[in-house]
Image: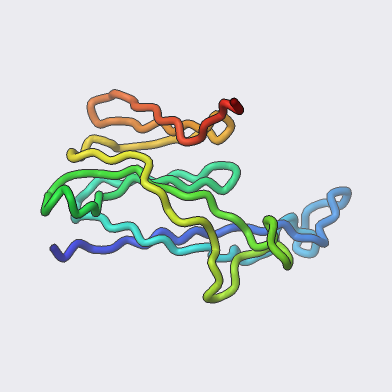
Length: 154
């Protein structure tokens, strides 16, 4: 099937190390470095007219709904997956300063599929990183809640 491939371009605004909080914000004293940096480009296959959604969490969690690509479903005109990743900046436990990964350097963890279904029913989503939960809104008004982090330390 010649499905179009959508690209999710994930940009970040990095903090300006020379920003002075006690001074007013101005062209010379900005809290963030401009322009935004492309941290990662994620391929996301989407069938023509398929429902999609994307949400960004406060701590670099990226989640999206797109068309499933699993071969075991066989050729199909429907089906969705809930996928995502947690991005890391260079400097999060690595040598070097904070910032996007250099060209050719791994910029984040691999994407994960958290849930999938054989019908197109998901239309929106939200994330609560503090509790490790994802809420997915359905076109019939229902809501499904998924846990993606085991918060029980035992």
